[in-house]
Every structure is written in C-alpha cells, then in structure tokens.
Length: 448
Image (cartoon, rainbow, N blue to C red; front, side, top):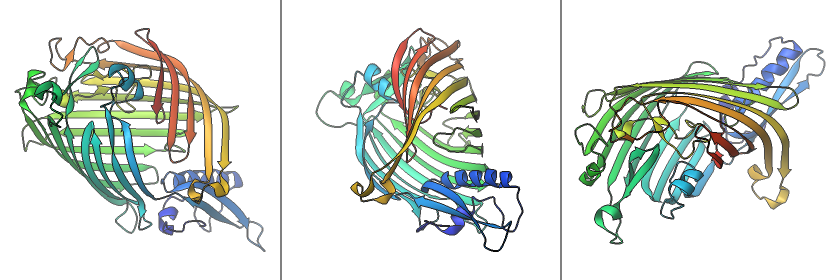
C-alpha cells in the first residue's frame, strides 16, 4: 500500500480479492486487479486508486502488486444553503421561486474517524425546516470486519407543511396562514426520529442490514381542518411508532456514484408499527434490479426495474409513498408526486462519453486532495416508464383528482451528465412526458 497516511491497512486489504502465493493467468490477474481497484475506491475514502505490477528480481513468474491511493479530505465543516423542495424545477414552477423555501445552517462531517472508515456527522439547520441531527457509523466491530453498526438522531420543526396532493402536486400550509403574519416563527409540526442500524457484510458484494426506528410526529389541530387523515384515520394529532426494516444489497457496480459496468440488487422489507403504540400498522416490500454494460466506442447502456407494494389500503398522508422523491422519479415528472400503495418503474439510458479529463490545479490549490479535478461528460438518450396504483377513493383527503396514478406513464428525452470528484453528478435533461409536457430539468445524482 502507498498513500494511506491515515487509513488503516486492514480497511484496504478487506476489499482486496487477490491472494498471496496464488498463480493467476495474466488476463485473469488484470481482471481481478481492476475489480479490487473499484472496491477500494467504493469505500469512499480515496479520490484515486491505482494498482501497479512490479516484477520480483530473479523470478520469471512472480510479481508484486502495489496499490497507490490518494486519500480524500476527511474533515468537512460546511455551510448549508439549499432548496427545501424536491428539485430545482419543483421550486421554480410549483412554488413560484419563493424566497422563504431555503434551508441554511451548519454541518460537520468527519469521515474515516481513527482511520477505520467510521463517520461522525452533526448538523444544525434553519429556514424552511429547522433540523438538528447527530450520527455515528462504525462499519466494522469484529476482527473479521463483517459486523458493523450505526446510530443517528434527528429533530425537525416546521412552520410550513404539505398537507395534501391535488392533481399530483403537493399543497402547503404555513404558519402565517393560520396565525397571521405577526413576524414570529410559529411551529405547526415537529418530528423526532432515531435509528439503530446493524450491518452484516457477508462477502465483498453482499450486505445485510437491519434498522430499528423510533419516530414521533406531532401537528397542531389546525392541520386537521385541511386534512383530517394527515396522521391517521381518526384525526390524530400525534403519531408514534417503532419500525423494523431489513435490507439486502448485492452491489457489483464498478463505481457507486456513476456506475458504467456491473449490476445492483436491492431489496427492502419494512414494517412500520410493531404494535407497541398502535398508532399505525403498515408494511411494504421494495425491490430494485439495475444493470450497467459498456459497449464499443465509449457507449454505455443502463437499465433498472423497481417494484413497490404496501398494505393496508388506507395509509395516512404522512406515510404514503410513491414516485417523485429522490431517485424514485421518472424523468419528465419532476413537478409531480404520484402517491400510491403500489408502483413499478423501469428506466433505460443509452449514453456516450464525450470527454474525460483531469485538470491539475497545482500550487494554485494548497490542499493536495483538491489539486486534481477529474471531469467527464456523457450525452444520453433515455426512456422511462411506470405505473402507480392508488386504491384510495376519489374523495380522499390524501390524493385529490389524481391525473397520473392508475394509468401507464412514460417519458423520453436527451441530456448531458457531468461527473466530477467527491461523488458529484449534475444532470441536464430535456424530457417529454405522457401528458405531452416538455421541459428542461436540472437534477443531481445519477439517473439510474
């Protein structure tokens, strides 16, 4: 190993499949080395990983393999300034670029604590949502580096809240509408959440996780005037539950942030409400399969299929899932939230790498972790399709006059993906959806 000044050697060797004193055909050796480079990179600890072969003097068929790594910057005190909405287009068009929908504050992340890939995080956020959080993750507790655990706590306060979904767009109520504009911050809802997570890394690619969650959500009674089913069927003002989630992941992708080769299997079984508080009894199963394949002439194809099912038929507004959040989103539907008890989603992208460069800032950047700036650009065309089933009646307080559930929906378009270091991805896309609406959208994170 070379370059791991802080990271313990055992954290790196945990990812290496190559075995000492074992004979490999040269082609197979190159394949395993490439896989090991990707696995070390996917720990999130390094900006670059490169293996080199060194022939041992006096031997014709023995080689020494040295992994050269460039460690990341691990201490990240940062200023928070971001939109509260799901994406830029949601804020610009659905919320009319309202200036009171920003979140700001301070965040501290310490990666690779003690050189063991542990992570400590703390945050104090204000603005649209006031939130305070703390978390600590220990990936390995035992000598074999198979068991790990994490815990996190967060407390949030809201003076604005979405209370229903009309024509697949969320409607919000704020404290000023309830109490009047008295220039004081009035809290209309709060949420406390804590998670205890246990991880078992069965192999290099298979991980099992169990997450135990306690959640408490409280609203003021005025919210019931807008949606009496916000937290339950009986006009509840508070919802407490303990939840249990099991997650299985088989991750064989080359890079986590922007994969070009390999596959991912992700399955999640969740039970919300274990009968202790009796405020909610809800269950769900979600499964995703994604496949990535390089083609000739710098072309790549990617495809993913996601399915979700849940029970019972009635679900409080605060707990109902659907398409529209994070990566559970069909391109071209950035303005919509499509809620339902069941959904399926299929995405396909064909892309070509236009360029891949690495700028070296040299002495202009005093921190060597930031001197090399890799940037890659990919042009792509895509087709997304899906179906959301919502079994609530038309008169439901949760979803009113849905125009996108219980029907086949699709979108297609073209775009440009820009990928750089520290897992940053910027997507610029022009999409046309099943409503024959066309638009230019800006997103972050890989589309598949």
